[in-house]
Length: 140
Length: 180
Image (cartoon, rainbow over all chains, first blue to last red; front, side, top):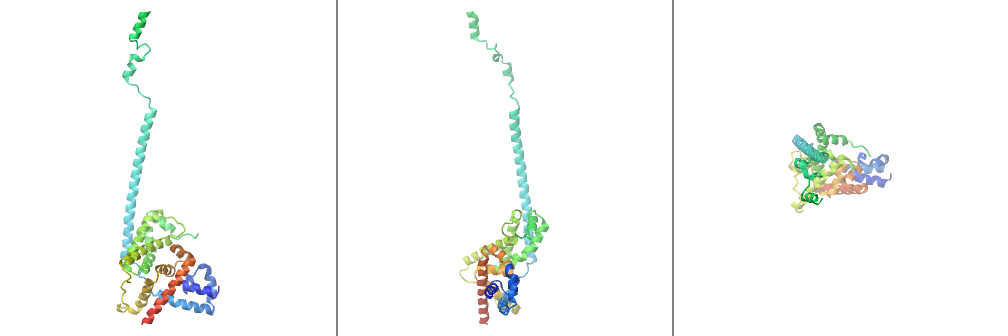
């Protein structure tokens, strides 16, 4: 690593080599031991020290609880939705079963002839002896 | 691809395990809040953003699948998008004026907080993309690859944003010191 690349990395990532790209950290550590390396890191470290002064307070308990409560509400809502979809699915399966059953019964069950049709004498070979039959007998 | 340390936890959250929900909040809330505070410079707005981020986490945990980004990068992206929505709204409502700054001298522990306030103001004054890069790499301690993926830029572009951002901060902070 040359001084130019070392300086570019320090300008971008600061003076702490732990923030530097992993692939260049080792070469950077070697260069950091040189006088030029030390001077570059010192300069970058000045800004780092100022940036470090800006700390953010840890989240307070109220925010923590509020987020957990929202999570609880979301879980309840999701379970309800899940049961609703489950119910809808079961109802759908039931309905599909009923339709399939009805179709099966319609196909498999033989057609039942109505009583009056079975007993109707006109459907036999001898039954429909109407006026034409009488005329035939006369012609003989 | 390196394993995602949050993947199993997110799966358990998606399955609705209350203990996993608590662990995820404890693990991620400080990071999300710190990111939002530094992006917005407003603690109350940052808390709102943190809450909204978690609502999105609960909504997507069950269906979340790791693509190119880790879960931590994904929540950083979500938080940054929410911060941008607020920054845009601010620009629409506030015409060019910076929000009123607190006078550090009026604070009880002024010497301690003075420097922090200067940095906060300087961060708010630089370009938002430069601020994002610095917050992700410097404060959130993301690797360059993770930060570049979160910002959806190349590593070279990230380095450029970081270097320009740090130069701007240095100039602003040096100017602050010169005023005294």
